[in-house]
Length: 365
Image (cartoon, rainbow, N blue to C red; front, side, top):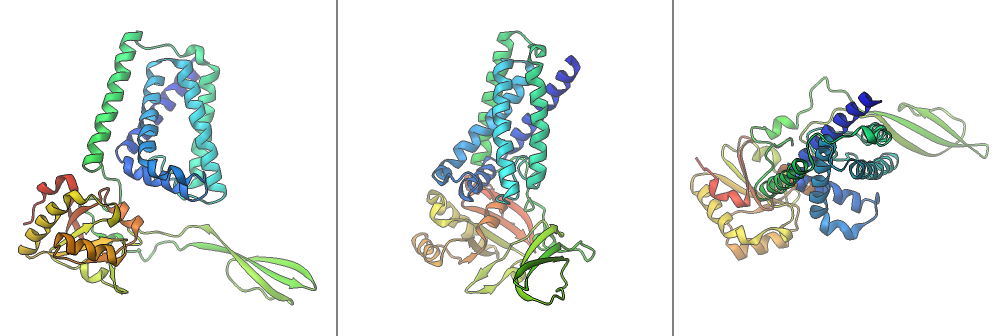
């Protein structure tokens, strides 16, 4: 039992630290995932949405600290019961999400590792089993260091988490796991290989046969039945290939400019997923930089999911010398964790990606 507890201790502790640090690297992204849970009927708690970022930060820091506490043996009973409470909650959440298909990615490991809802639930079940082992063998969880050293380690861990979180919030994630990282060619990322697997669907055809409902299941062909057709239910039983970059469009007045924009030799994108929530204090700096870009031959465009009225009002108020195009809000949130932000591209390849706090570091060659 002693060795099983030791293995469980290391496994659970390391996994919680890794999972927490990945999300701490991108707390804004995790807050977007929490907003999905709050708004899509999983928790049905829309009043928490304004506090999603704060909740995300608190949750991931607790996750890291519990992992550290487990590894060093600091307050073992409190640690185990806290881990148990957390994993029970997330096991329920991932099961509900998977069963009712509410959120397609739990965000457990941020954008670094994508898990389907059922994979997330399975992962939580495995973790629950290991934590139950720790609960049964809690007497084997001895502190590695004395109480003073453990306390110092916890304080250092907490301060480190806070400083790291503050850095990525005021700049950009230290490690970009998303499909729009620097060096990515957006057009290439949207390409589907010729040999890519297609999605497989199952069709449940409903007929009224002599007053009774009859259901026939096929992989697509319309069945021959001597009865009246009632309806059909389609179920995706195997996902097809999805390119890493999808739902990316640049539209204006109903016209798609994506292909032409991605062929521009020198292109600057001003990204603002929601202009109403943008940091207006940096718009003077934004104008200064976009004017410099225009003077050096760059084409400059704005990309937002906001309506035209807001965009036109900001153009007038800050004397901006570019127009805003429409792009899906989720896509813009994925591209960059800053509102606004500036990207520099060369024929669709991202060369620079800049948070509004770092506009002074932009380099227009």
